Image 1 (cartoon, rainbow, N blue to C red):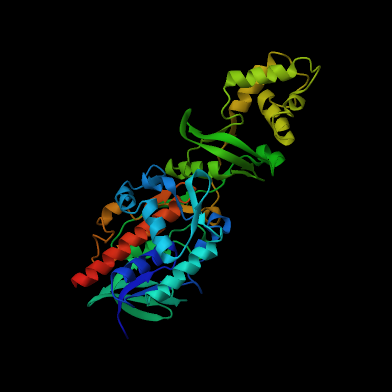
Image 2: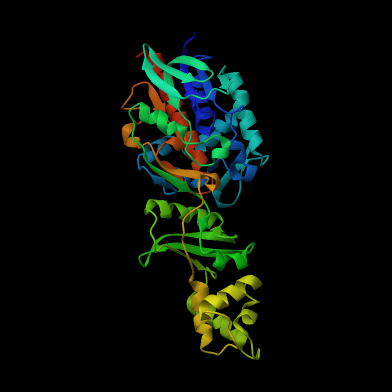
Length: 410
């Protein structure tokens, strides 16, 4: 049974980056990627609605990340410019769209994966698919990795098995069990970047409506976090990027019972300005109900539901003094939070292995020769390419460090 110099457990974004970094820094054929799926990169193909938002110009300053503050050291070493340079050298042309989001020029995730796979071949990285690692234990000269398909000894191991989000891609949280068995702890995990459940009776009449808002997660009378973008109303939830970015608050605060999401339907307009606009529309318009007056401002279904919210039910003919109340409701349209959708609808995992248990090179302090990277760690980012950026950055850091340690023959 041959021994691999380096075994990378997981063929997702961080694992592929780690294997390439190790191969580029070490000898040809020194790394092997172990992937339980029939092919590597399954989750990568789903990112960015299939377009693969692979990084963001704002990923370097750390302000778009949550969880362990130790991520900043890795992010400083691998800013967006360096990631883009590495992809360019690998043969991938990229383009920048709104919000600093970086995509492959083709706007197809398959372009990213094809370039990564081509470079794996170029550096002689072996890929073993259908190899589901169930156990890793220390052995003479390194580690023994076991799966139903057989065993593989390796001198170094990079654990890049992903988190729990998007289990349909193979990310089922199994990497946490492997990390625990090797001495690590795991900060409790919960879904991040997911739709937020609310009262179905409130949102069902709005199903399919989309509109730009400023949104805020509130609890105990305080705003915990705010975001802006397009909200989408579904059968029983609020969705859209701005809602996704608020969703982790529910798990972070341990499911507060009084949580609400407040929507400002007129972002950029003050309450006084909205009141003035409604009054100007009402002047000389004759006898109108609130939904009729709002038809020139908002989608029709939203006009009806906002009026019900403002006046506690169906409204009759508007009075002049009602306009201020209607404007206030439009600036603070609240929905109760009843949880988030589970892992199958989440884009990222909050929680994971704390970086305090790793060195700056992402080597385990609990088990020498073991490196960890990607979503397995207690780091998660906002929408917009930040999570993939962390996958590349942490994978590159772990891969290079593992290759360096092999050269040092320790």
